[in-house]
Image (cartoon, rainbow, N blue to C red; front, side, top):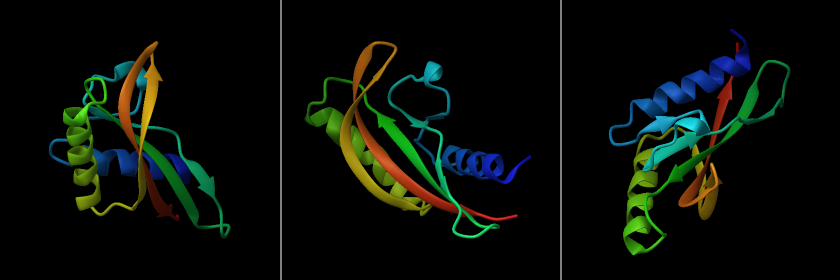
Length: 114
């Protein structure tokens, strides 16, 4: 496979090892609470190293009340504890299949090289 696909697959594999973090990489498969890994933004600081910035969306169950926020923060903390490159987290609302969900958007930065 290629460098970019390998970097994506490696992060999916690492995320799936986190106990308590259901991960999907296809929005058709979301089943909250879960985490959806979206396609990365890629920068090439050199011709052999790629910096990949991923958006991991933690999708909660409920209307965004305190219980939902607690659940989202607990799941986000699982990602932080895994030490896989979490750089930022911010609350948001996402819409999939016409439904709105309370969510946290996590930024994860990784680097890959051949």
